[in-house]
Image (cartoon, rainbow, N blue to C red):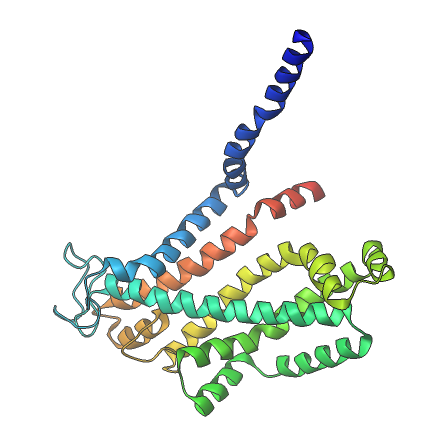
Length: 301
């Protein structure tokens, strides 16, 4: 009696003991799968996300709204990144501009990917005519150059944050749809989806329970790439004066505002350009070094 009780307690303790270690090591092993370049990209990406979320509250009120110094001051202890054409501190402008550059791009990317994935699931799980109508309709939208479409939308409806989100979202819906549809069609042809249909499951169940979980990984990587495309599109629109409008400013508009004084105030032009470059490179590094992707590539080799 005592022997069986002690053996049962010992086996229970042995089975429970490794669990906290696995949980403690889970995040560490997951981060270790990124590699050095992936961790560097993740650190830069987290820095910009924190700057966009917390930066404006850490700055003194109105720091970037009014110029209190000489125009185009060089980098110094007072102004770590110099000043712009109005004498405003560039560090404060970069931090406040992160809200628009990252926030608008993130919402537009979520809109594009969410709409594209939803339509792709519907096309794969429904009949052929729905698939044909959706595919040909989005192919028509793809035929319009993205910047031309953005210029038409801004000229017709004006430049505002909601309009920029909707415009960028519409532009990148076809790309997200094509990627998600190519994955969903292959999943839809597998045996377990056929079994689900045989037992009477509806289209919505097939979409959400059978297909969607199996395409989330690749679509998350595609979402990161699409975020980079949206950032570059919005920066180019702002550089042309059609993006975020004053008094608000994103990184693209900061480059445009100071481009005329590149010779005397180079920091005010180079710093926002470097911010755009660092954000896009960081996202690409994270995507290229995702632990699951790296493991699959090692398996192929």
